[in-house]
Length: 607
Image 1: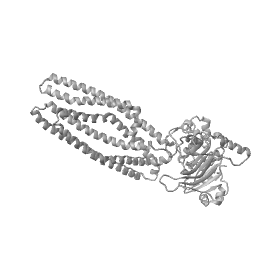
Image 2 (image 1 turned 135 degrees about the horizontal axis):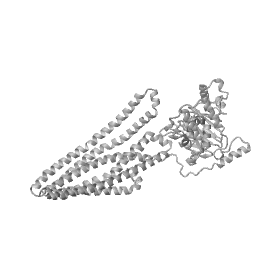
Image 3 (image 1 turned 60 degrees about the horizontal axis):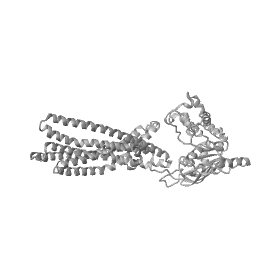
Image 4 (image 1 turned 90 degrees about the horizontal axis):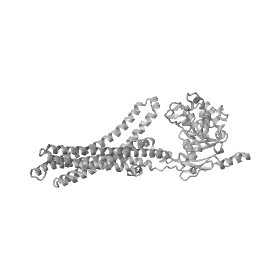
């Protein structure tokens, strides 16, 4: 909690000064109130002097109004400080999450990150607000009341010295048992968030398989588990108030008994006894409130630890100190190759040399010693079974993950030396899951190039085979897109995400099984359109394409096909070469094509 306060409280320093100062002035009037009441009793009530009672009554009213004004000032300062800090923490937390690589996102998990940026920050905000409003008030009121009571009578002060430690012992025992529960509650909230997210995002699948009752039971079990923890900590916390009030009331009884004796012998006045009782009540009530504050701060501390974990997490993928890469030599080398009539460029568009990647906690590589060389303008097809490492392999190209061994070069430069913004401008990637955000078709297409013209957008839509259905929409490019693109079919979403990747003229395009929802005819037309993008592209470079697919028809016309199995490249070459040399590729082809089709070019192919 202190780390967050030190990091974010600077801009709100004046609120943290004005708020507690106002609260101290309010407490000052609270401490004076019992003394005024004592004078009212001794000088007005006892002698039946009505004007004196009225005078002290008016004084109490004025003190109450002034105290209320200071309270309102403190409340406003607390709101400004807590809401301001909470907003800053959320903004910085969101920025930190967006800096994390896929490896860190996998480690934290989306539901946990959502809980941290919502519930955990709320807990911190609450602690800040109560800190400004109450952290000064109750300790100062407790100490001030104790001092004032001891100044009235030292003998009765012994009751304070007995009551206060008793409450402190109860408080310490309860808090020691509660703290672990608060940490467990936050973890169990993560579990509830995970199940809720899965249930809502997969509602169609759940209904299709009639799994509603199963999902309700999962949610009920997670909610019950969290509720049991909350009930357990609630039972422990509930001990605080009854025990402290019991001690306080016993202390009041002891004061009245001992004070009554002293009044009879003339050592104390009735007003002083009442003032002593008020101070005793204020002291013990303050301790109760301090105990409740500690509960709030304990929760906030657990939440702050979780927030700090994200804020302090250094992304494994960083481009700090990387200078912009000059692509002119690559374009020049390509032009020289063309002028010489050679078949191969001196600088490949993509080269993997012994590239390996292993997920955290895994003993085996998801990608194991991949070696690939792809020239500018060529097409690479990646095929293999589910879980063979295809998506992980292509994720190494734009540095979504960093290799654990080996290297990946784009345009002759190791991807670890590229500025990330420039690398991901040169490399356009279309992920497996077509993801659109709420807005319009235009706002989604302009992600890579905010200044793209309508002509460029329509050209990208034409290549992605999406222009036809977009033209039919009443508002065209300005047609609305719902969250996740739910107002479009799966195939339409895929074509829009492909068009988005083409805007901005990437030099290397990765299609990660991004045409799986397209029919064979549209898929073939898409590949033809991409292959015809042979005119000069970004920095004078032709478009180089990487296609990941489980369809043989999608990769058979690629210049190079990589066959993957268990993270390894078990075959590499053209379609005909792999048919002759790679049993796994033969097996995949036989599962999708007739034997007479294996040696023939697919009808509607990309060439």
